[in-house]
Length: 293
Ligand SMILES: C[S@@+](CC[C@H](N)C(=O)[O-])C[C@H]1O[C@@H](n2cnc3c(N)ncnc32)[C@H](O)[C@@H]1O
Image 1 (spheres, helix red, strand yellow):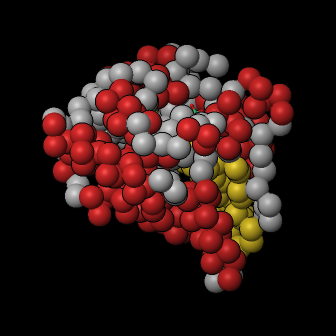
Image 2 (cartoon, rainbow, N blue to C red; image 1 turned 45 degrees about the vertical axis):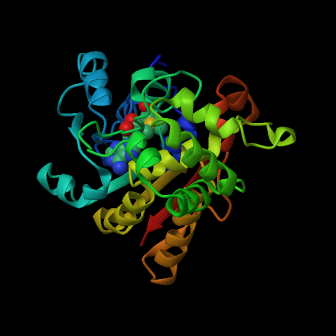
């Protein structure tokens, strides 16, 4: 679609939402608007939320001329405040809510945003550029035990201990400032035979999750989302790693046990081979659906 971001599970997510003409939908992760435009093309109205001003600017420049303000309201905000944002924009009692989690290609591919080890830039990783703590602050400020815990819990990294030790040693000489410096500090101690993925992949994931408080935002927003749904309304999530997916799966099961509705996807929907061939990011995507009673 755009250079900004290629939507994952586009058709599947919009089908999962059961879009109806004049129905109201909240897209909690607007990004480049790929999913939102499909919902609108099927006759829906969308409140789109994104924490990243770049996404809002992109949507304003590229979509607002094709789509009326009435059909798409784009709002800067964190989906953990979905209740407040929905209330302010008169999007209470909606037909569907979508979360397409994680980072956009734009965030990963823009070196100055400091998300990627493949492009050397200041270690940043803030989706909300107004946040005060960056990845650089965590890498240089946490003690050895805190770094170990971060890489273990948020990266599920088996080599958290040598990585934390290597960071502490490097910091004794000078602070770690860039994505490239951190990647090489990690690669230095990573076992060679396990380098199928870049050795820094999981550590970078852990830092990104911590900087943006991603798991807590997700945990807070899911119950609020169910409260906003009409009877028969659907909550649709696309996750990209096991920590997020576990939160969604457990929360959906809890909603079901509380008799709030039913889990439609006993097993998650995943991308077709052709999609994965065209977009490697689709490889780890898992789509889950919950329908409110
Ligand atoms: C995978 S992209 C979404 C792409 C979009 N579905 C599309 O088709 O273009 C995820 C987006 O969610 C945003 N995001 C992540 N966490 C957020 C949060 N807590 N609140 C609001 N937006 C968030 C990111 O800034 C990013 O733009």
